[in-house]
Length: 123
Image 1 (cartoon, rainbow, N blue to C red):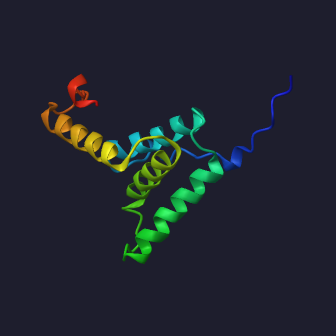
Image 2 (tube, rainbow, N blue to C red; image 1 turned 120 degrees about the vertical axis):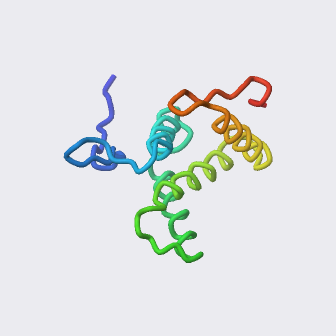
C-alpha cells in the first residue's frame, strides 16, 4: 500500500516569529487548532477550507473590514461555522445555543483555568 504524496506547501502553517507561535489571543490558537482537527477528521478538504476562508474574508471586506490583519481569526471562525453547518446536521440554532453556553462557561471560569462546559449545557 503506497502513501499518497502530500503537498507540504498546501498545508496550513502555524504562524511563527523568532520567538515562536504568534497569536494575538489564546482563542486564535484554538481556532487554528480546531480548523486543523476538523480537517484531520475528514470534515472538509483543504480546498474546501480555502474556499470557506476566502469567502469569509471577502464577505467581511464587502461589509467594510479594512483587512489590517487584526480580524483574520474572526474570519477563521466564520469559515469554521459555515463548514460545520454545511457538512453536519447541526442547525444554526444549535450552534448559537452552544456558543452561548461556551460564553457563559468562559465567564464562570477562573482566569488561567480550563473552560468547562457542564453536561446540562452541552445539549
